[in-house]
Length: 491
Ligand SMILES: *Cc1c(COP(=O)(O)O)cnc(C)c1O
Ligand SMILES: [Zn+2]
Image (cartoon, rainbow, N blue to C red):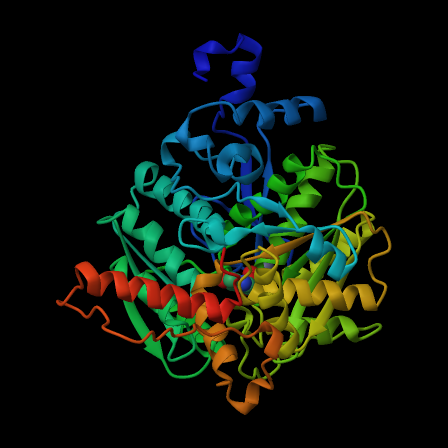
């Protein structure tokens, strides 16, 4: 519908107006910093930042919900994506700064009845692989790039070189959104050599980013990116950038809206790598709760692989917890293969707030074998889950074993990327080709290989098609071979 077709009161609710107050808040020294500059860490103490805001308008919970629900009906591109929740994500941004490449509003797919039965609880996958660059990273990138666009348009920022370190998906998203703002934004990405999938490497190359392959793992790349951000004029697009977190809060807003704002007895499972996503999801639900848009918080259970489990280890300690980074081992949940998560201070702060506000928070750990088996099991039941989505399902099974899910109404699994990005791991499983460090033994019932049919007689070859009787013979013989293979009865 066009805006003119709504009544005046509703029009006012629908149209975002830029305003309100936003500032960086340091989780270490609690000081605030001005939002008109890009800070990645606190200028006073170097601590990790979150962005706080005061929404321009005070609305009742009913008005907030009506605002978001009405916006579904409007054909205004700027509010079709994550900025349907403009006031919650970035109230200071004028509409003409908002970048929309189709991110957000990914489908929540209820599990098939056979998968529900196999797992023993009602569950759904939220397919964040159905974002433009095929992972949830686009949510945060739409937030950060809209802010950069604001600096370009309103603050004379000149040309901006964006930089990020990545386990693959951040660079795919950064390169795509930067290319949309070319030539004013130029993008460079740092990847751990040999530790991203061929699909993930192809993405930033295709979008024209400068791609650097660095020896080591993600944590090493991150250190280099941080050094560059500290010493040179670059815009860091890692989730250390608090704007990314704000954009990723949209995941929580969508779930709330899709469930008609009733989060009672819901539990979410979220894979943890650098811990930006789980921080954003908790921050999002807390924001909704503070505004009384929702009246209860869903349970949140983070999932880590045995091969990259620093957050799990932290929460295993009963009291006086101390964070210690871990050395990672090869993981099929490669996008979460991080030993020293940048957002750990955010998790610690937000999880504490979450629990104080009555929300459940826990972290579970799963094996590489469980991750692969779960990814394939999901696919076998009609779902597209990436390896990290498999990690969510494996985490659900662990959480059920541990009786962590008491309110057994419904569970939402985060499938964070499109499964085709990680399809090479499926091939390794089917071929039994995993190097021993993964500790993955393929199960026969989950493996699959194409069958060759070779019927007697002439075959078509490239540049030499068959005609007439030869073609007829080929079709008949091939069909008979397939029928025999499938055990079909002749009718
Ligand atoms: C980045 C990423 C993760 C990990 O998210 P964090 O915010 O780093 O914890 C999980 N899955 C996929 C597909 C990712 O790209
Ligand atoms: Zn500080």
